Length: 154
Image 1 (tube, rainbow, N blue to C red):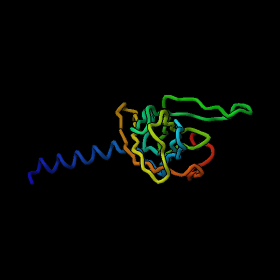
Image 2: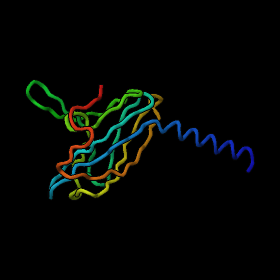
Image 3: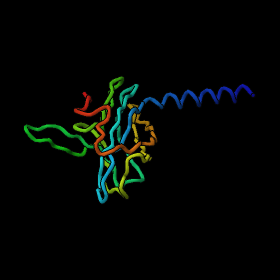
Image 4: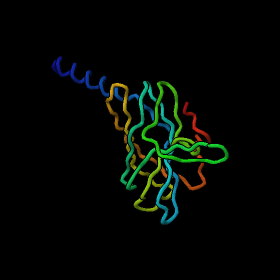
C-alpha cells in the first residue's frame, strides 16, 4: 500500500476519534399506553471536553425537546431548554426529576422491548457538531433506570 494512502488512512482514523468525545451509557425510553402522545428519554452522558447537547431527533415522534424539571418552593416545574451543558469529564444524567428528553407527538405506541432510533447532536467548543445515533430500548412503564432521581448535572 502506498505510503501516502497509509498516512491518509491514519489521519482519517485519528480525526474521527478526536470528534468522538462524548460517551452515552444506559439510554432508555419509557413505554407508553395507547393514545399517549409523549414520553421521556433518559441516559448518562460524559464528554471529554466542554460541549453542549444542542439537538435531538427520532422518526418515532413529531418533535423532540430537552426539558428540565426542578423544585420551585413546593412545586415541581418542567420547562423546555435549548441546550444542556456537558462539562469536561463530568457526567450528566438525563433522568426523571432533572434534565431529560421529551418525545412529543408520538406516531404510535412505544412498547417495552422495542428499540427506537434516536440521534443527538453535540456542539463542541470549536463549534463543530457531532451527531451520535443511538438504538434506544423501550423499557416498561414501571422501570426507573440506573439514574433515577435528581440529575447529577452541576
